[in-house]
Length: 582
Image (tube, rainbow, N blue to C red; front, side, top):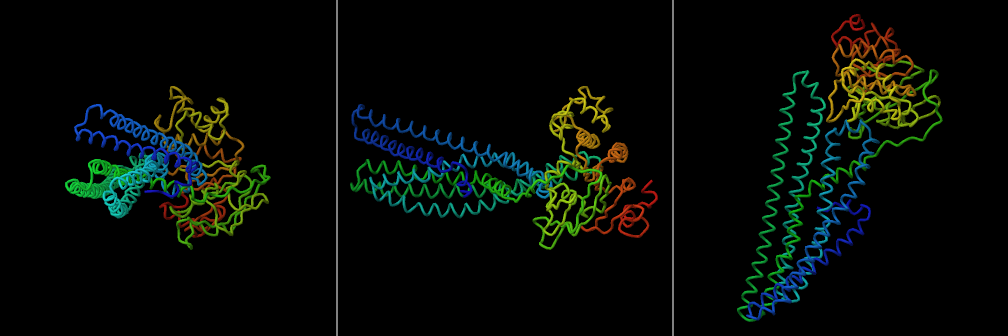
């Protein structure tokens, strides 16, 4: 139940000392409360006057109030500390996702990020504010009650002491079973989130293709598996609770039997027998609560482990700045021996291997290949999100780089993926992504160049229209044009990376978007990954990828008709060469 990483949190020692003090006071109050109640009951048994009950009853209620106040104080301290740590962790997690980039999200799934940032952190908060008070309660309350019971009646104290290891033994066995079940449940929960989020993001495309119902069945299957795993965890939790209650009740019953015989024999007086019997349930209560909360906080423990694993994931090292003014007409980029392997892949399995090419000035470079050939991986590498393996040589205008995670390179680059991210904000604010302080006139000019004018004219609020999550939905073509407007607004960025920007668009929308894009290529270095071969005539250099390697590269006129990789790709796409490039 206790994750050791908790003790690495800031100010943990001070918090534990404060909670320990509160738990100690509460334990003392429990003992005093039992003393007051026992004295009152003994006075009643002995038929003493009502006035004799005043002090015991006052002691009882005073101790009861102190006990409840300590409980409230502990919860307040733990909740405040949990909030403090969640506030600290959230920006760290967001910054880590930003450093790891979209390549990491692609491997782990968008749903995983949603799980960590929303449900995961909520579960971590519950875990922290629950487990810390229970830890100190389990240390001090049983200890003080056992000492007092042993002092009053050593036999009762011995029974309590002997039953304790037995209870811990069954807690450990059932706890291990519950943890295994909970780990499976949390893994299924992450899978469910990934499936759900990915399906929601791709729902328009799924509807167009007519396969939305298949994905509905898939989500139902995953959620049903998650339900069954949840029920198995609950069964183990109920079994554990039954075991704890059984042995607790057995221990109290044994104490009651021993005390009853000793009372009959006259070897013990009423007060020590009664106070031992009253304190016996208090002795076991923190242990039972600890066991019950073990199952309630397992998801929080799993979420904390996931957060720790995320934060421990090595992020790409930011290389030192270079004295480089940015990309120009006489700039040169040269790559040789560039390879990349995903962290979870086999040691000798590379997604990209021995990549090498040269880009000069405002050249237009197309990267083509079958699905899975490594196009997106290569674009993520050029954007600085993937880091090349050792041995790569990258030269940028005479500067030797170890990766593209270079501030000057990334400041000169605009990256347009297949599905540009649209923020929950106005259209104007979305266009201002690279230039937050751009004027309204500049935003309107960029929107017009990107071909958004007709669409904006149909909107009552124009550029002020709210879009994104929970706001007005937009089509794929409109999203791509907003991404283009972002590029047009920032004239400083002379490097354009396109990762199949028209992959999910219909032919009419793609053709209209192409009329906007091609003029934009004029004064930029363009690296364009695509499987739509009609873009190739607009390119100066073509790189054909096969299984992560460059199988062919050169000008279109040099590659066509040679029977090489490009010709094979054209043939596989079901079109004659002359028809494809009309």
